[in-house]
Image (cartoon, rainbow, N blue to C red; front, side):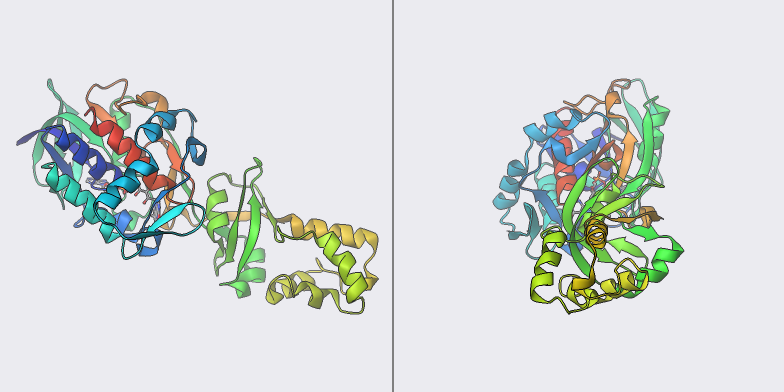
Length: 394
Ligand code: FDA
């Protein structure tokens, strides 16, 4: 049996950040992870370049049962604090769009920074060490892994959510929470592509690879202005991933296919300038040609010249293109999702320390908690902020 002050379950973004902080406070810390490498999700994130934070991160960018919960940790360790950390380590990075910061070289650079911090703080990272169970003891917790047992005063659960089971996602975090009487809210795959009903899949399959700049809205009124991407399974792209966190089974999403243009005004202009041109060919100059052909085949676009359109046809067509409705069949699920929506109810945790209100010395941080960021570096920022917060107290 190994005795340490702090055990952290999970060598991901939140766990490594927390471990280094606790180590700097003089605590003896061991991080346990079942994987053969630390930070496996960091390594595959952002297409291998890790979108490690967002310059504009603020509490509004997070979904959580209690929208106030993230305020404290985000203000005590901000995106600027993380940027200062990576600057100190000499990371080469760049700004992409919408405040998103990416590594110039590789996501491995972020993992190396976290491991260097852990090394400087005297943290022991024990890999290939799956945690099987946890027990309460008189002085803290007993953690039983495949290989050995650890006893600790503080136990930090940073075991992530259910996304990407191939990368070692397990429900252990939720199980430990339930074992100690904490409420776990229903979970769902989020930041995930949509699949389509067979009828729509057959219609749009040929558009696979085509991307369109849109505004996508969910039934609760949330909207994102970014690209959508047709895939051979359905719809993806940043706007779709964003809205998937707000979509619920059975609902439709509304897509403004021409967010920068007033189609009614454009049709009026065309009536003056190209009255004899077919409507289909005219529309194919402002939207992907193959997409227009599909809408034409399904009679959503009248088979006529621009000047033959009636007023009601103009109204209907503009309404159709600006409010294209599609009802997803579902999502691609945890296999491809970037995050898990739901998780440990934040009402069970202190927003200052992340300690469970019902279990002294037990902390939950990262994706396992009911906090889900938008796409764009917000999820890593939450991992850094909550890891930092818990690391001051565990
Ligand atoms: P994380 O899942 O990273 O770590 C949990 C760790 O616990 C894992 O290493 C796992 O092996 C370990 N574990 C689980 N069960 C265990 C057990 N029983 N015993 C021992 N160890 C166990 N976010 C962002 O901000 N920018 C981005 O660019 C991206 N890109 C991105 C791409 C893809 C493909 C995915 C899947 C996700 C992203 N994300 C992202 C989201 C981001 O990766 C995610 O929010 C964080 O990794 C969550 O960090 P955690 O530390 O909470 O969990």
